[in-house]
Length: 232
Image 1 (cartoon, rainbow, N blue to C red):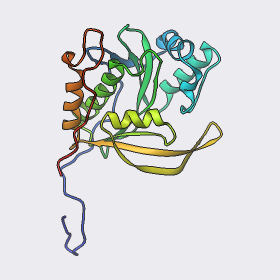
Image 2: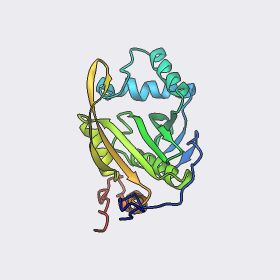
Image 3: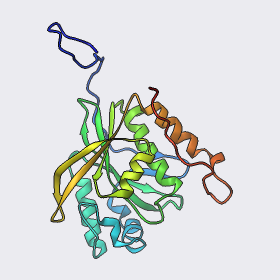
Image 4: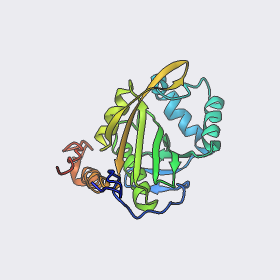
């Protein structure tokens, strides 16, 4: 551990310069595509998120469920217009928009960004496309934007979100108690992250799982996604 001239321990020195903010982007994978969210996605999203999905999809989101398409359209416009939020629509295997995910809480000076507001319709959940979408966003943050830290935060009671973070290779960092109030209730927030030092092994595990050879003719996985632990 480095010590300064007073004998105090300090963080490791690094060569670093501020990055450009994360900008709207289109990302293409084998089983999915992501593109900047727009009002044109509303019909697809209404069908996927509100008609074909249970209202419980919105329990841990800051808004929703929505009673009609105009209400969802207003939510989409809010996401698009929120400063510092980069919302993306996720197109699954059928090429219709069936989910939303955002880059958010962008801190280009320190190279930190969060993935959040992740809302996946029932037909997108637990699919190759859903995993690949999360992989593409992480890869963009680390490899194209040059960021150092990629965050995932959720209500500590949101068990599916916590399982997803851990499956994707995010490391659990702790719970921020009474971090938020939403929908008239308390939220303790669970924090997860991947650092740039961890990304190569996480990336390689994602890529291995996504290979065609990992799936049988019916599309079922032959081996589950496992992120190897760091050495030591």
